[in-house]
Length: 637
Ligand SMILES: [Zn+2]
Image (tube, rainbow, N blue to C red; front, side, top):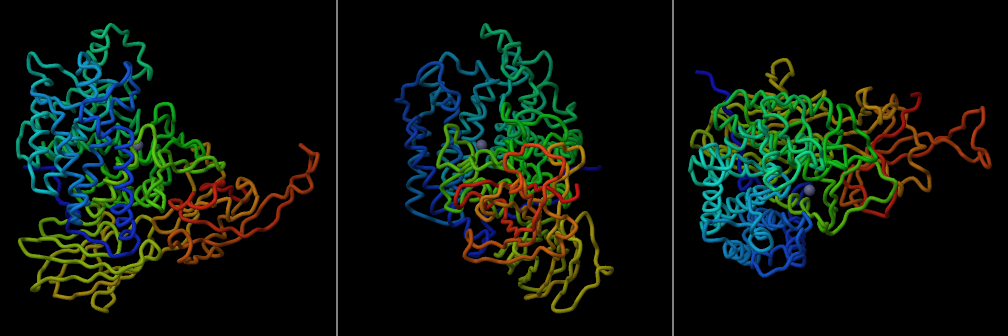
């Protein structure tokens, strides 16, 4: 019987360590600065003390306070991941005290949402479309699973199981239950995690119900609105595409609506394709992935162009300066692609994951670890800056939990296979057929493409090592124990080199990926980017910043795309922006000196040459405030 189940299993982040290189340094900042910074903000804004149930809030309350439980839940998840990888008695005490306060808030029937316990008890489960109640439950479940796995203590997990049982008794297709589902997907993927932590199949069944029921007619959100005495047509977003509930997921052909909701939903769809061995869900995920990646994704892995719905508009509508591209949406994109990657190890999913990780995700946090972007536009006039906190603070704890568990994205194992998806200096320990395998990467990645991989096995072991060849890499060389393997003699499948051999203790693979500077173009249908190019090297998208270009309006600068690969040079600057490789070359700037008191004339402006310095996009806005631009005018266009 054929199966579509996943052939790969991610190596857990607890088994993956990073040296003090590119990622090791960032994980340390996350652990020592970001996680504590977020804790203090959550306390200062009453989000943690909300679980003490002695707050007062007006009715109606701001929506961001209604779903405040999710922010503390994501912090619990981040802090628990940090503890799992790095024991810390002080943080442990903090985590345990927050867990106790969450447990304290739980009602006798298992219900656990501070807003609807204290402020609007009569509105419990009455506005699933707008009020994020199941979304908050989902984040609390994810936090509880992480806490249990980090500490081995069941108390928070048991509390969230009681809440999940309450939800299971409330929602479903059985007579007497509400046929609802959440306007903001999240609980679906959380229930799959709870199922794995508890082995209780009811949680998997409930997740499946939420996915199958979504968008069925008559639409639950219509019925629910009428039951509140509201006209469903008054829904502010006008369409249930906003929450991906306009039609059942298996009938959806484009990725639509609020971007974070879309990718959280698709992460769960992908999980359930595997858990239930359901090819219709896998096909759905693949179909929507194709639409997203070929028509609706920014070069940075940012998704969701529109501010008003924090989401998708039309195919090829990818304006750079006004891009919304919420950090959480890029995180969801990573979660979804990581899940898709595990089915059969297709490099295209790792390519999107890597693009998102190094660009649209990493831009979300400042080098200091204490300032964050909610929106990640691809150009700025100089007025967009990271902030220490937000009225709606979904992004900071989402960044923290992603970094604290970053290692999970890097490796997978299979029946007799080891996959290296991403490159970064550090060590991974894994088990293959009951025997230990350790891989050590020595590399300066992403600053160059040279990776030295040491394989440690106790005794000789035959397996296939899969090394990813990123989409940006056209030429590479491979040596095993100093002996060069010709490209022709090497198996390449779906973006991975396959090396099958009997590995000996201490074998060394030297993998050198060429990392030229490339001028990137967008599809001609992207109106906002016509006649523009962007610089990319390896996984990093580059931008130009005002501070490196004097007083010149960045939109007057042009680059000759044909000269980029030969004439732009890479220069590593250890003292700049925490250590970055910059790209230096010549650009052309339109001269305005002859235009005084002239608005129009029949001669074109003259132009002159100028030095251009491009920095990695993720590092922008870490110096003096100013303009930024990824997509630069292409000369001759
Ligand atoms: Zn967010």
